[in-house]
Image (tube, rainbow, N blue to C red; front, top):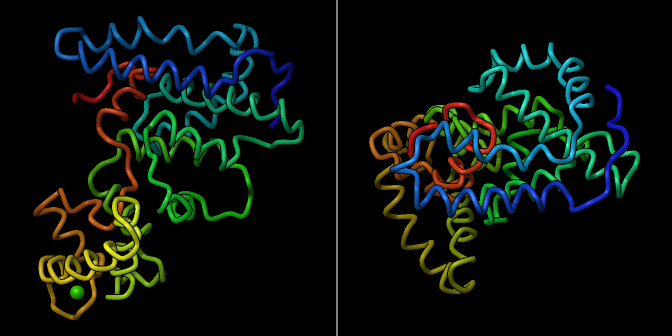
Length: 266
Ligand SMILES: [Ca+2]
């Protein structure tokens, strides 16, 4: 695929995008119950397209039409939504090219910033694990496919998709089982950001008993995917029990409203 050309100067795309999302979030909180969601999306989609002329946009869409067709089958987005999402990718890539002309796509670092700034995923403790679950390759950039499928999961993923993703993030040993020490490590790590190291150890020790009792359904001392899945189906609050790795509903909704024709209901 050809590199984007003629990156324009001006504020970085991500910072513009971040501001748009923040405005949308505030706006949606106040108005979502009264305003028609489609109108919100249409009325507020303008500012994101400032940095690309229509010829360039048309060329980009034409060049990627087969990819969009493929992604339409594999993600929860429509053809038009995918075009918008890939345009966001393209603009981020162009942003990156300003500092590194050899950059071959959106870098993982940029994607991390997007998750941080626009999807409010500010908990860094599991970020590396999340990237491994999304994209195992050593390449510093993510492909458009990874971009689209990750956002499909974060914005419109089914409970099953989310459970599989979360468990993969938690499964540090990669053997499909969460042993006691892995559970302790996950709990402690997620608690450290809220309390100090010592308090986190203490709390993790307390929590491990409660959680194992609740989730280790076959009583073999480990939490398998089947234990986890059945527990989450019974109580969806347990989905992110071992650490945050999904955006909040509000953040996902605000992001969706930048490009989606029919955002999910809140
Ligand atoms: Ca078990």
